[in-house]
Image (cartoon, rainbow, N blue to C red; front, top):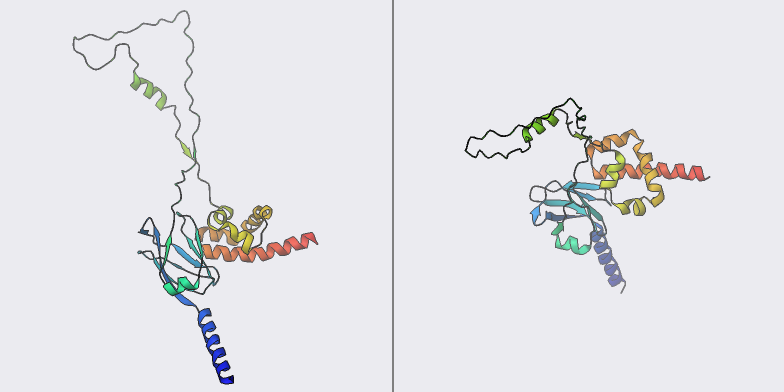
Length: 238
């Protein structure tokens, strides 16, 4: 009886250890059945990452209950919690949705038209009629001279000015980091999120992250800054 009990415990322990061992999960990322290249695949739990290849394929080590993130700047963010079934099937397919195209902000300056003064009593307006040759040449009698009007305003028209806004860390975090990451992982209250991102933006490291645009590095940075932010908050309250 004792031998059977020890055998049962040993088998259970072995199965538990096997289930907790990282397994290589293979999968593919698609958008409308088209493979997506260079999609960031991030194991948030294990803090590891990889990228899809030209065929949209990826391989990453996972355990059950790990949180996988799929990120590409042109597509909506995807998040999955890995199950044992995902690991057993070992053929995960992720479908991503393309974001609507955002138009660049354009600032158009006012166009100033030349002022035309009223005719005085000495002005003479002489209408000039068309010269008739007996052959229709496609013109309209007494019609507007569009070429002359265009030439009149061409020199006065100012070019359109395009205003490009420089990306800062706050915009990067809001565009790439999932909303629930702030509330669930960092425990940041909604009313404190704006202040927290400003606190992060003041760190010189934030500018480097804006250039790198790496979601895993950004999330690690937010974790580190959150500890400082919470200490600062607790110190103010005390």
